[in-house]
Image (cartoon, rainbow over all chains, first blue to last red; front, side, top):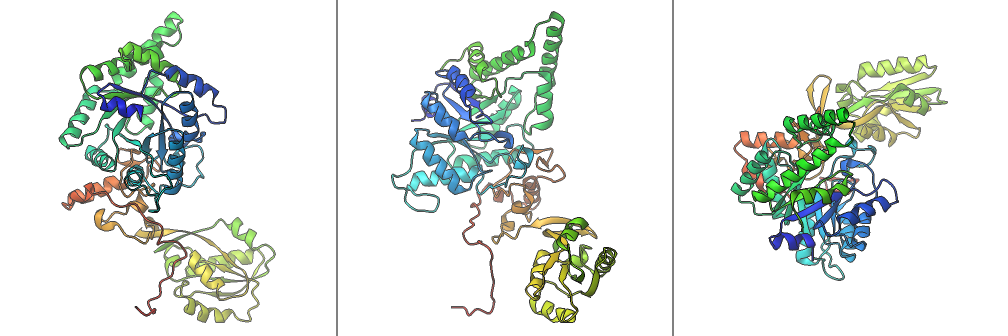
Length: 307
Length: 216
């Protein structure tokens, strides 16, 4: 059974991390990083060509992780695969014991690095969840035909963007995702606890009952924060954080010490995680380290979180 | 309105390589409105091809280039003109309808872009993808299949900033438009209902409609 499901249902503070497959066929670096996460998190999301940039498939790295004893979460977007291809991958994943999935609509190919690729979007996030729920309920495939060995039991999740205007649209779509079978939610990276709290209150006011894990992105520099603010929808890093990162860079330059902003970014991430847990804002966190997965155990230690 | 755009001249000349005698077929409907195949454009094409050393043996401008019988009738004017090829200055439908009626090559002068709204003379907006299963009744009269870059029937995605689509910031997010329209018309309840995903089983192309078929 899904480790993440056990954690969330058992009342533990759930922790997930995130990794991208390589742009190539050598998975050694990813596996080395993944082993550092073993026993530290309840699952590792494996991205499905995030930002529409070509990588090896999510399923491929998920299989590697599972075989290495690290619990993978299969991210599935509707961008590149029709409903048939999505279902086929879920069935293959299930045969390896991969039963935790995260359904996403997916970034459009024109914002990525293979612009000529056809945008498929046969199903969006809600459609993928609905299809898988229907499969589980009936034992049938996406054409209504019986599956030979019945349907696998999945733990399905989805994403939400708390910083969104008008917010009612995100709340509405969140409700649709939960109605379609999402049993956990991971948020886009949040940097401001007050706005997270406000969002959680609106979710609760809307009567939506689902565990929402706060997305945490450890910042590496002021430049990274500014870039994300300008280019990534749904990301809003407060100016105060950017100033602190810039001050850390200046301090490092003065003292001739490298890596001070990244260290501060880890500390700020740890602080957020600790507060989210202490204040019971969310039942867990999802850490997106964007290539710096090896830092996740240290961040969790600083936050005083162990699974 | 079928919106067309003129192909680059070099592309057309590549298709016409070796052709000495050519006929031109325009269209008085959509292509005329798009300034890609009306009378002035056909005249300009004639002058251009003659400059390139070709002999233009005839020009025809059917009222509708997508009308098979009409095109058949009008093309009789080109009979015995000795054309080695036809330049079609209509949409892709018109070019094929011409090709159905002649036994020489037909080359398109235009790219067929989309089914669009004429905002003003010379300004066109893609409004309908002709999906065959209209959802406008529940989306405030804004088509998500066409005006959302991902054709989401249950949007929005997370990819908008300040109401603009990240795929092309010139475009407003269709789902924010839908929200505003539903709000303004007191129909926000329609937002909460999940729409079924598009089925593609009944829209396999090419499609045909025959109103003359006897109803059983």
